[in-house]
Length: 65
Image 1 (cartoon, one colour):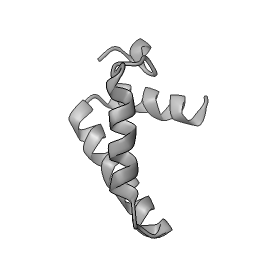
Image 2: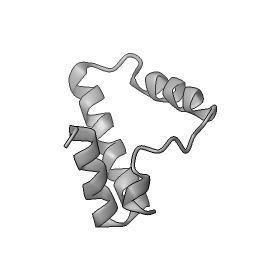
Image 3: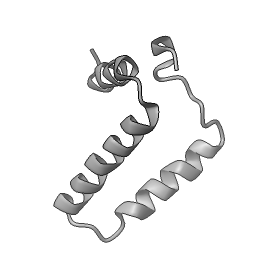
Image 4: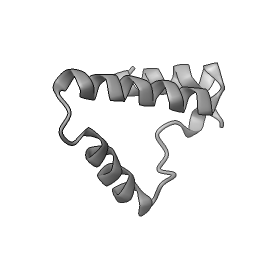
């Protein structure tokens, strides 16, 4: 994945399905449990991406840098 692609919509119409699945995964969790789920998800997705430069670019984009 090219770093210039960070933030590009790759899910299209499936984005709504992803959002629904994400919200369902958080349903019934406490704030702390939800934060742990998010942290685990970030680590799993970062491992899936597998490119530290791309991950750093995504971190900067998420911070708004």
